[in-house]
Structures are given as C-alpha cells and as structure tokens.
Amino acid sequence: MRLANLAGRAVVVVGDRAIDLATATDGKLGPDVQSLYARWPEVRAAAADLDVGAAQPFDPALLGPPVPRPAQVFAIGLNYRAHAEESGMELPEVPATFTKFPACLNGPFGNVEVPTDTTDWEVELVVVVGAPADRVAEGEAWDHVAGLAVGQDLSERTVQFAAGRQFSLGKSFRGFAPLGPWVVTPDELDDPDDLALGCAVNGETVQASRTSDLIFTVPELVAELSAVVPLLPGDLVFTGTPAGTGFARTPPRYLRPGDVLESWVEGIGSIRNTMVAPGA
Image 1 (cartoon, one colour):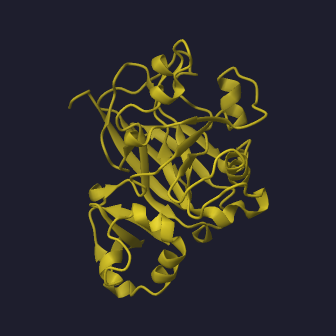
Image 2 (cartoon, rainbow, N blue to C red; image 1 turned 30 degrees about the vertical axis):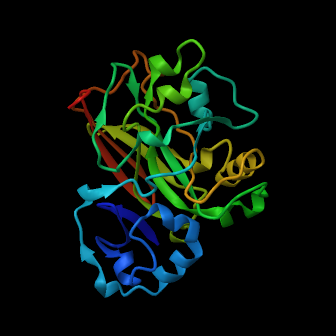
Image 3 (cartoon, rainbow, N blue to C red; image 1 turned 90 degrees about the vertical axis):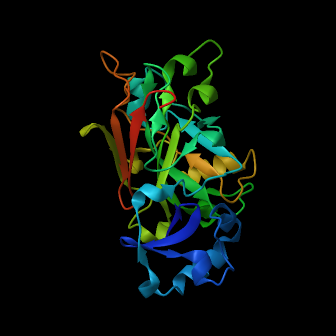
C-alpha cells in the first residue's frame, strides 16, 4: 500500500492514480492522514478491499507530507560508514540521535528557503511508526513500522556546528524536512533492509548508496530508540545519510536559490524540491 496526502486528504495511490480513502470508506477513515497511523490495522484492512477502478488521476504537485503532524521526529547522524569517514568522525557505538522539529516538515515537491550560503543536502530513508513501540525487541521491530518514505535532512551547517552543537536548530529551518512522495508499506518492497538511495543537484548525482550499508539498521534503531522513549503511531525516524554531502567536499559545495534537489529511494519513489531565496 502507498498512502499519500493529496491536498490535505488521505489517498491510497495505485500506479499513477489515487483513491480518496474517506470517500471509499464512507467517512470511516480519513480524510485526515495523520489520524490514520493510530488506526493502522484498520487502514491496511480497508486498503485491501478498495475498488481499484475508483482510482482517479491526480496532480503530484498537490502532494503534501504523508505524515504532516508527527508527535516526535528522530534523526540519526553518522549512520553510514563512508559518511562518518568523510566527516572525519569515529564510528558511533550507539545511534547518534537528535531531532528535527515537526514544523520544518515539507511536501515532496515543495519549495525550500535557503537561509544562508551553507545549506547542505542529506538524502535519507525515513521510517514511519505504525504501532506503539515501547521497549521493542529488534526481532519484532518491523511489526511496529507502518511504512517507509523518502526524506531530506537538509542542514544549515553554520548553525549546526556553532558553539554548543545546535544540531536540531540547524536542521529545522522552514521546509528543511521534505518527505514523501508517500508512505510505502514494507510488504511492497523485495527487501526493505537493502534499498538503493541517492540524490542529485540540478541533475548531477551527489549521493548514491544502499541502506544495507547502514551502521544501525531499521530494526536496531527501533529497538534502541524505544528502549529510551516510547515511539508513537505517526512518529518519524530519519535513518541517516550516506557519503556525498556538500560540506565534506573540497571545496565545500552548498545549495543555492534556483537549485533543484531530487532525492530517491528504490521501490518508494522520488521527491523534488526547488531551492528559493528567503521570503520568495
């Protein structure tokens, strides 16, 4: 199943068409997509019975973040070996965790303000929690995952690395968490633990890797995080970015207004965001 947020309404995407979930279920589910994660078994059951013939064409430009109001947004740093090496840092022994504030969430095709000349890209696989997870064992972690999405952990490096390590602020400027294009359930993927991912700036690929290179896998992250704090339906986990970030290049390279940033994950899809000047 592919669950999307189309102009503020929950839809199930079938190919290049979509089925409005509230209409299809006589108002029992939706139209608010965020509320559906707390009722995930019902959503899955309803999706299995949808009339595919009722699907209608839609404009992808109207897609918003498929998880618009998460209670918690976790993000993991240095979770690919090559990225840790390019950053000049030792491999972490536990997940290096910070947060992106939910107000920075953006749609899969939304514009992103570039607040400074040190704004960087970070493509990521994003986990969406479906069932409450509290002290979950690694072997049971996938049972608590609603699905996966493509994300960008955009980062303003000057603020991020300022005195006091302002990671969360540096990664939470307006629009700094593009997400989408939809949430894909793990059963749609041949191997959810091994997916190609990457991103391109103005058509030039700058990151390319596979999630099998994660230091801490999705099940490990769910287990580690839920050992500390309960994960709630609709929570997000940005799982980390591979090598190829702009600040680690010689010379460093950053995003500018007018740049087009395209990000993708195998089996899920792609998102595309245009950088704009502040206030544009």
